[in-house]
Image 1 (cartoon, rainbow over the protein chains, first blue to last red):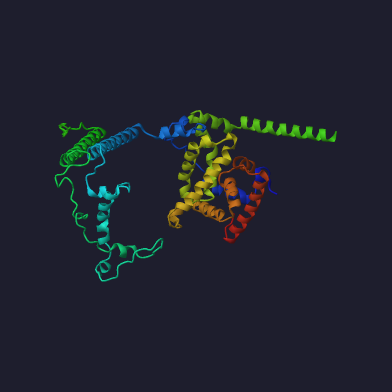
Image 2: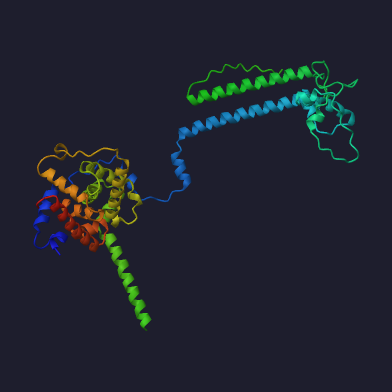
Length: 238
Length: 196
């Protein structure tokens, strides 16, 4: 075994020497690269860092301030809308149980007196009308027989419901029911309906205007431009 | 009695090994250089580069085209410098940076576009350089275990013990690789009609 190939000791081998001379021209000859950063900062041993410190380092203050501003604006908007909603509800109910529209009245739970339940049935009539016209347009179809005792009848509910009921004298159907405001009536709570609706509408418009102005101001601050407050502060509240 | 003697022998051997490892780590020049670089010494980085650039160059030369090697050497050292904090045993800087170079060569082949290396005389240059690059191509056609050792020995001029020390390979393995690789290289060169 040649010692020269291993550690360059002993008698040099001709072919190895020749290859060394030939390939030695391709030997590395270059200077150390320019370091693009400070030496100590990058090459220090890695310490175990907590996630909090890492995330705090990666989170720039400008980004945080922008995010905080947007979050504050969103929170403000939500608070305003919630306030407007609560005010609306307060004006709507007027402290009592009366509601503005008929649909809400229809959707009341079944805790009414028997005489109040009748108009509710009448209100359900439009749902019945919405069933297929073929079945509703067959008046000669035999009427359903009355139930006997606890007999369970499995039939098509739409067909049964689709029977158009004859209007009973002294009752009004859902189509005939008009809002109390249109009739100039008074709600159960005692508040005038037209006034309450108008006031609620004004409250909502006011809240929306206020919110939009607040958002504009926040956006202007975020952009660094002084926001011009076009809102004169006039409110509908008198 | 026998057990006591055996255990004392084992303890003595373990202590000796621990002492040897500690002393090698403390006394090895690369450990001192790595520590200096970590402390912010730019000159230490330059010396580290001078010491290990031939190793990185040889490792890359055995795997990637000659024209690409110089840039890749710089890349490897920059990567090594950035990751120097993750090197636990400073005395193993050589094997560590050699591994970075091997990975970088693998990345190079993975990312390189479908281009053919120029094989004409313009690309190769003239005279001895062309001959050298031709010989290098033959070495690069050898099995991977042989070509890295042969390049480090014949191109970079390292001895077998130096190769073993810097790459972290066993000296016996390096010796075997050198001789088997050299035998294979002679055969390939002879087959090509090259006279050494």
